[in-house]
Image (cartoon, rainbow, N blue to C red; front, side):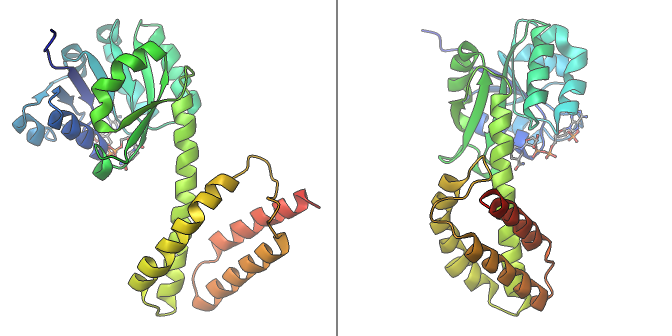
Length: 273
Ligand code: FVH
């Protein structure tokens, strides 16, 4: 029986890299960490991780290397001097970026004989390792099948296909949905605050249950075309948005968001004549 622990190297100890390292150590993996700026590894070394002094040594210490850096450019910059060490190994990139960047990175690494998985983290640092966390992966199925059990402690692994850009595509699309909701919630709270309302009661007793009620409807109704669901009444929706604009003006809250939403609604109305 093979009882050797999985050896995982993590490049990047930002907020997310630290959460990944913590969950993997908790699960009993043999973890090596590296960060561009030194001084961030202390708590992990205290918990049994090894700190590598260079990217090359970090890569050499792992069966699997996970990159969780700021962006695509920082991944390229970090890996470029170390490609020789990556050859024959597996790199999982959990750095956010576009689908095209993921495809180009996959092609670049393939040239060095690196097995590659692109990832999209559907969690925030505080939820890594919790039941709700899931991670999108795309790339060769056999690479996923080998990496998935090793990386399961950070979040439920979900393979979305062979196209290396697939995980980034879903990640960016899902984030777009999240930022829209987040901007809406910010605007809602700003309105209540500006009029002297009880923000905490509003959040807890109105906004949260309202958004929870609407969430499945919004997600199911989201359409790739500028079409209008059957029960949708554009005139009623347009009037609703005019009301939000008026309320924003009265409260002195910026009208930008409601203005954008109104413009988008008008495009939908034109689409149905
Ligand atoms: N934090 C979150 O909520 C989100 C959740 C979804 C996924 N994202 C993505 O995860 C990537 C890392 O995010 P992060 O939260 O860890 O970000 P930071 O705390 O800002 O840490 C950034 C790390 O990247 C290193 N770094 C930056 N530039 C370079 C470079 N040119 N070369 C090498 N490393 C670089 C930085 O190192 P240092 O500044 O400490 O030296 C940090 O380790 C990200 O793609 C999110 O979109 C997180």
